[in-house]
Amino acid sequence: MQKAQKDPALFAPLYTRHFKPIFLFIFRRISEEERAGDLTALVFSKALYNLHTYNYRGLPFSAWLYRIALNEIQAHYRQTKKERVVSFSSEALSMLSQDIREEEATQLQEEREQALLLTLEDLSEEEMVYIELRFFEGRSFREIADIQQVTENNAKVKTYRIIERLRKILIRK
Amino acid sequence: MAKYKFQKKSNEPSDEFIRSKMDFNKILQQQQHLNNYKKATKPLYKNKFFLGFMVLVGVICLLLIFDEQSPEEAQVKGNKDSSVVDSLQKPLIP
Image (cartoon, rainbow over all chains, first blue to last red; front, side):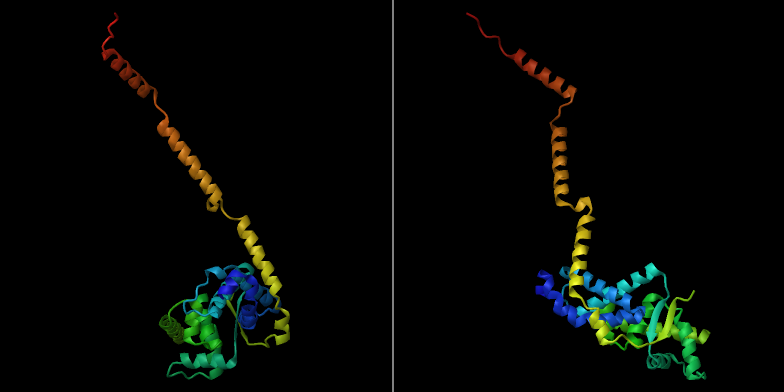
């Protein structure tokens, strides 16, 4: 890392190691292969440009890259004004639904998941990022904290507050 | 208009496709482009030569202001000088 800060050519191994995860991270939120490729290139060139500002303080380099990627995704949606894509697997949605479910719920699983998707519309961009990272991508709270630049406890509290909010909205509906 | 477009995870691009998108030279070029752009759009107040020049101009201006005497001051000074001369005893001429 320190060598790469002095000589950009030495950034290549870091680029090779992190390219695929960053590409997929962006692709899941953009759903356009070509655009995801362009944004990934932009993420790495910005990382390389700002490499001198990166100080290792326990924060993994990948978390720093994910942070830049999230900023680029937000910039992309600001420019294009398209609907923000949220990708999830059936299992992930079912897991989130289980976590939110109130005790006396009588709905069928499928109905509940449909209602949940409608409820997710009420979340802000930041709240959606927490839900995506935790439930749709299955990341640990440590990873979420690193990406969102908060403490691990703060990440947990924020996630549980979002779950609580979703539960309340579901009950109201 | 809906804020989010929810979609079940579709097939992710293949490893070959992802590898085809890898181009480190492009990254180096973009980084150079960012460098050039930053240099070209660097604000004047962050330019150390411009800043040094402005400090120099400021110092010269201050020197000029404090060095310059107003006409009244010059008059007072002139009067003082003449009174000193008058108070001197006239030399005895043999």
